[in-house]
Image (cartoon, rainbow, N blue to C red; front, side):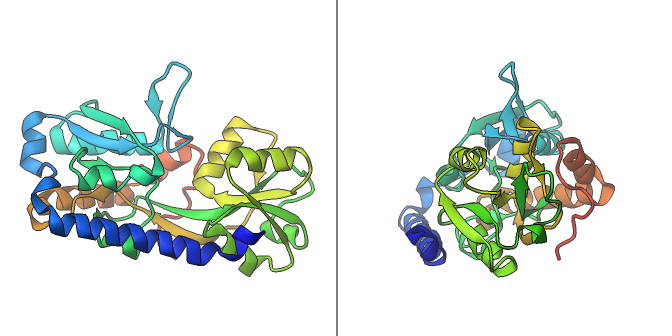
Length: 274
């Protein structure tokens, strides 16, 4: 539990630390981190996007090795609008720590990989309008539980050093929190009866339910993280910023994003910030 007590400061130091590092890189080497502008992207006739390939249902590989998921569909839609071909996308799988870096270095045009909009991130990259509002949810296989509040006093597994901890402590102050270092470790805790439920981001837990159908997501959500497309910062990219933001707004207003979310097992009843 020692890690739980230091979570908020640890996360804050980590985020600020990376912000300082990349701000320094950009100031010292401005010409070394040039991404392609909209006209250059259109002239080469394909869009380069960093994604997750192991995060069902956002971005993952099916049994045949093909990429699919909610964020994969969004990337293809942006390619359709920007270069006129939904299939003209070059996908680059990335780890979490690389999601901003590949855009800053100009290795890809965009990142669409469960990146939440935060102030520290917006200092070093341009973040689009939100395409999904992720929230903290809880998963269990106990059939007697229906809602988040049913877990008062129970043992809940949470990822060490995650923002989820503060949310659960606030809404379920009587619950006992058990720290885990991975989703696999959380599954092991649940399977062995060492925890009644696991708290995490709804997008991840939705994929969990699809893989392990004996589990269910309890009613009730807390918190909220606006997922955004990562774009390079700078006035020279204003046309790219505009077309990405306009497309996302159009997709939200037309109901396309809501329908895609529903198709991939995500909540679709609201896309409005709380």
